[in-house]
Image (cartoon, rainbow, N blue to C red; front, side, top):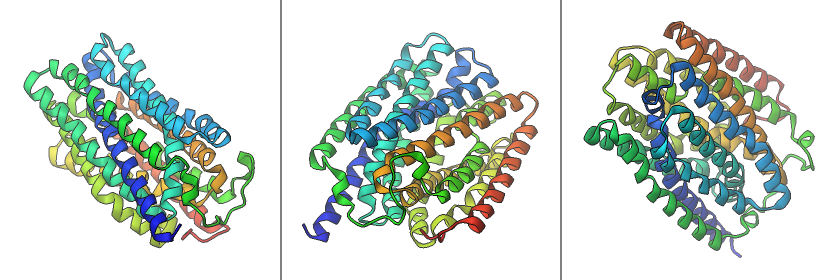
Length: 398
């Protein structure tokens, strides 16, 4: 089979998985955009919102090590991807939640579904992106993905604007449609490319092994940097809680602002991916700098600084979702890709658990403490990046 045909097949697979992610994002990003105020409506405190968001992300990320390992051992990447997307059904079920603990369980179930599917899906993508440029491929996937992340919050903006508090449940019920479509498109992708590993034929530079000990040292140093950077990255449910609790903007505007952030994420994604293909890990130096600035602005009570902070928040998301994912593919052996993504995301999620819970608790003491916490973590992330650069045994332009 010619390189041109293989490249076309790889690009088609990236596009199909992008559409699946788009539909998935309509579902869970729509719900996520309003989950903070919804939990508050059901009686949750700021600390509970921060803890629920952190626990959800932790369980979702912690499950990725096991899911990635099993996907590697069983060579069942498609199966884990299907199971993960099926659990998106927990989001429409939020319409039936009568109190905040029930809603918290459903939000956590969806995060577990993401934990099941993400290592397997990213392993599939890593094979396809090897043919088109890893940064560009992940950037293209992220850009398509973010179209859904814009549509989902807009659905809730409309539902709440028209129906008020009843709009929450109406919005959740509407999410049944994108879940069904996501599973249909995923089936099409599987039928077209049942063995995606055949798309990647070039050798990887690191030596493959059978366990986590065989992952190269630079992978672990990179994971430490990423963990520190994300620990100071405020989750949107807490930002949304702040906007509603302090009455910075009217409630219908909160999911709209989230849609703006997702739009910025999508616009940034391809450019970020291309920058990664040219400069490697060095393209991630902006993450801790912009994260600190985003927190300093988003937790104010003036509209314009808040909007600026949310725009910066979207830029950071674009870098995280594109370049951080691409780097894992370059820093891990092909036959350990699922495990590498699983471990990376588990550490990533633990950092979000600690960071989210700490920020939720600190919010009770005052927003200045949240901002100081974020800045301190990002300074540590910058230091770890310098350690990564100095001690790396291979060039940063991997």
